[in-house]
Image 1 (spheres, rainbow, N blue to C red):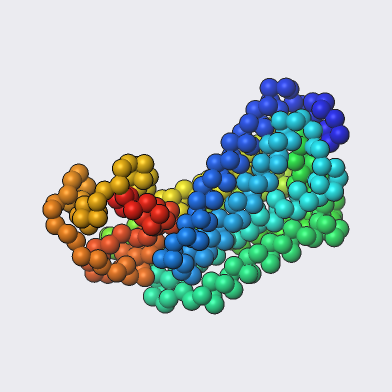
Image 2: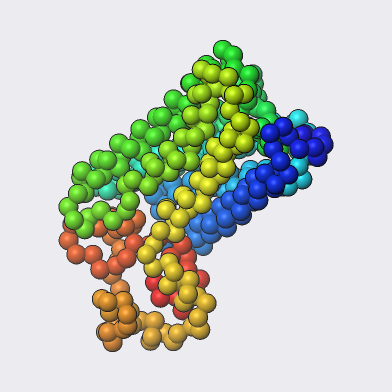
Length: 345
């Protein structure tokens, strides 16, 4: 499959086309949404905060996953891998490094939110930068080990993309898999679960917690859990007993993680649709923009609301004790507000 357009064993023409199409849709969607997140951070000064730096790290990692999926999609539609053995190693390394960075960035963001909102201590730039550096250095380290002989990269069953080789299980693969999985899947998952659980307990008073504490952990489990199960199954049984088409399912599910993360972390504002619609509408005059909708959200009340600074605790949708009149500056919403003066956010 690496050198010719022949169909791989266990796949038909329609199935190869379907895999390539799904990968292409996932890649383009992830690139667009995470590209907007990165652009929002770069273009909107108000978003350049330590907490949003962790969101940026996640968006960069997810962009890398989407680029990896785009290469796999093109190869699948070509029905061959055109980049040779060295290209396979590079593709496997890049995809694995960004996948680990995405998982660990989610855990770092969970811890950052807990520290920021539950300890009432401002997350400093030094702490945020240190977290991002640790995430990426650790991810590159673990992804580089198969290139150095501990584990190895090889073609997926479809033969048009590369990942960790789980078809030949030996002591080398088993030792690498369990060590890597502990530090890069189970430990980040535990940090995510504990951080959001503590946030629920600390901010359980009605109105103080307005972000989902279950979506991040569920995303890790649903998107990366099938891969973990496949690798674990390969260590205890003959993976060749699993149909090749079924072996490709974890890869397709994992490539959806960038889209889910972008929607949850950056595009999750309840006013995003209105902001996009206002961007496409004729611009309003400056006095009209100063008049905000009434409490019902169905029309203006004719009263100009004075500007209220956004407190740090409201940065991501968590309301601190006491009345808060302003909305949290979600990444994409703030970008729309700055670049589209007619947007009603």
